[in-house]
Length: 303
Image 1 (cartoon, helix red, strand yellow):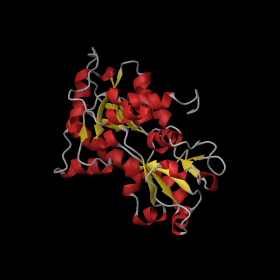
Image 2 (cartoon, helix red, strand yellow):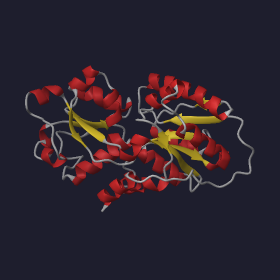
Image 3 (cartoon, rainbow, N blue to C red):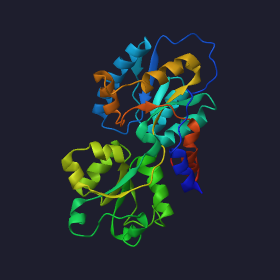
Image 4 (cartoon, rainbow, N blue to C red):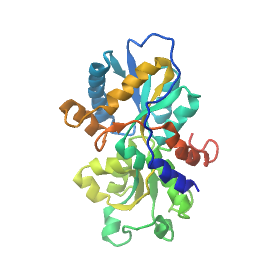
């Protein structure tokens, strides 16, 4: 009943601030954060610089962005005390919660992350030629898959790999064997690399974060139209570590959840992070469904 678990979890939200053990340490004089590199790196640096400045005003201490080269590095940085909170995807959120052994917790998530989706996109030429078209269910691609190449995003990406793999498998399409040749992975470049690969014709079909596609240029979207939209699931979240103390974590949560689109500075952050309207508090248990999908894969597969 994993599928029903996914959608029930995605519909729930928690009402209380994240709980954590009370730290005996003094409130930190500086806060550090990182972000998984699933977006255009130059734009990511720009967005994080803006966020640093805004959070510094709201929290009253310097807030420093620490870049991460890959998904695993972002999780490790949080656990190893190289950063205090991190923007993680669904799978990496679960990785951090597990590695933190009760000391890592979800602080806030966007409104869109409790009903996140993956877009399956196809090269426009194939659609124009009638070889591919929009389908209501992935199973409709089962007999066609052998004729087309396919790419995921990063192996540790929830929307670019973990969940589309789950939905393909559920539809009876073996992600490793059903496509023409081996399925690909965009190990660098994030969801933008997947979009470019499909738009250029380097691969026929790809899976990516729906929000990234929606914000892409009209030219790129036209060159890689959507042919399937997955059901919803939980995804990204800000995750913090208890070592900074309960009060500090509560302040970080409040800083995000009180961002208001009517305020120009706040709106810039909400837009940069693709929130529909706001960040909100959410219970880490909602990510249990993602953990089940992750743990259903062979040991070491995501390494």
